[in-house]
Length: 311
Image (cartoon, rainbow, N blue to C red):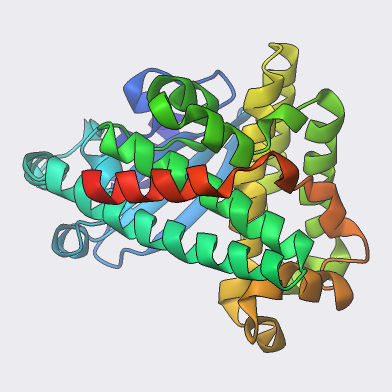
């Protein structure tokens, strides 16, 4: 498969990033390739020989100038396949020299989102919008986990989040565990979340998701990973991974502006999605949001303050 990709792109610099580059991949993880292209900005996902291949086309100048995102951080771990004019090697070495600052800036950016999500969650609960409150607190939990991983010197990896949670949760583990609703992880709730993804991609929602720029093969990728994790008795890992995808999909819908009326009061976003049947009536409930009764908000506030000091 790699020989085929190399042949397709001639002498273009090509490198491998992600969990395969780190050697921590599951057998069903997608292969993440970076191809240096003057046009940049493109993304392609395809299935080759039973594996899912993700190709991202980047402009090295643009990446170097805006070295404060997850792509730049991923490139610091890049394994180079071909690089005839050493452009990719030069970019990777430049980013490696700035890896600490890139990670710190990215942690600060994610932390800003954390504070925003927490505020929305509190307001939603105060005004009686329970589903939205649980959604924004779940988003808060994932952001807190991402910040913890970045502060620890690693890169967040969606299908490996449970392993990273065990490694970097530290003193925050119990509170973040509650925010993420991990006590609710069972084979049944995992399958409900997977059903949520598939229902999102049914005909009723395809137009909406297309405008949100969500990748069409996402349910295929998610199902492959989830069934692998379930067969390996990694139920909580599968539940945490799917929760991450659900949060990302709903945030895409919120940010897209497709349903402008949904953006008037973000703290009641999920109730608006449900009331307007944006994804189909009752689909949101399949997401299995966090049980709010298990969350001690004063502990969340304490963690946010502590992380702010660390950053």
